[in-house]
Structures are given as structure tokens and as C-alpha cells.
View 1 (cartoon, helix red, strand yellow):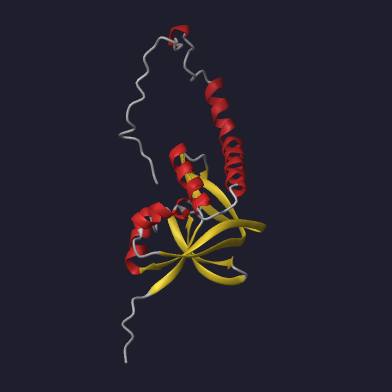
View 2: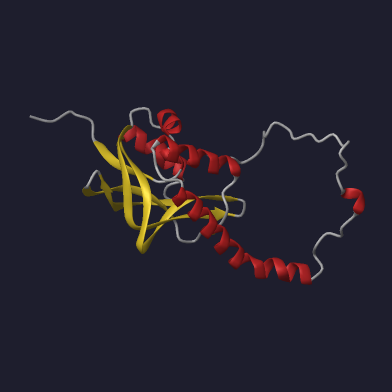
Length: 196
């Protein structure tokens, strides 16, 4: 007799998909299985300049806080779209430890061509809320942002410095200073490329 139960799989979240409200919206049939650690993986932020996103990378002795979700086929299709699979992220089974049990589950990992970067404030806030939703230690998140920022500036400082030396910097004009009386229109954020 054929089993007609829908196929479900385990998915490892370590970034914005820790955020329970976001996952409810994006993957309506997903169920949170538990939280734990991905051992020997380091949390990093990589991507385009000004738009870095979370990823994990193998590193002996490191660990990354994670949540494990049980997802259905439609949920996975939605995640594929969100993660930019297969162009931005690829899928890989990674070993995780949850409630003292070790098993493998599918994770999205950013393609190697992307360099270290700094996440925008909105994305950071989404991930930070996810950490709190899942009761995870935000120290790991703060350390990942600090290390990714350090790597970003280490990589890009020579380029910025050479641009300054070539005289490509804008001339400073005292008239550009903002007075206390100036009316600043911060806008409504429309048109910004914010990724949840």
C-alpha cells in the first residue's frame, strides 16, 4: 500500500529564518523542532557591499547556534526563492546537535564567491529577534558581526586608501554641514533593497 503522507524534511536555520514570525509568513507549514548547535561551523556575514547576509563556513572548533525546522515541499520552494538558490546559496546537509542528539539536516550555505560584509540594520534586527525568539545566546551573533566587519575592512581598506590617494575623494565643503535648524526628510524607506 502506497504511503500518501506528504514528504517533509529537516531544515537548519542560523540567520533570519530563526525569526518565528518571518517563518510563519514564509513557510506556513513549517514546525519548529528544537534549537541547538552546528559544531565546527562558524557564523559569518557575506554578500554585496552594504548588503551582507548570514552564512556558515566550516571551521574546526567553532559552533553556531541554530534552530531546526520540519518543512514541507512548498516551504522548501519558498525558501529556495528567498535564499536565491542555487545562485546565491547552495544546499548541504550539516551535522547538528539538538537536545543531546546529533543528526544531519539541510542548510543553505552562501556560495564562495561572496566576500565578507556588514549587514544592514533591518536585516540585523530580524536575525537578532530570531535569536531571542529561539532563546539563543546573542553573543555568537555579535561576535560574527564584529569578525565579519573586521575581515571586510581588512579586505577593502587598501582599495579605499588607493582611491583617496588618487584624489577621488569629494572635497569637503563647510556649507555641507547640517545645522540644528535644518529640516531633514528621512523618507519612508521605499525603494531600499531590504532583505528580510
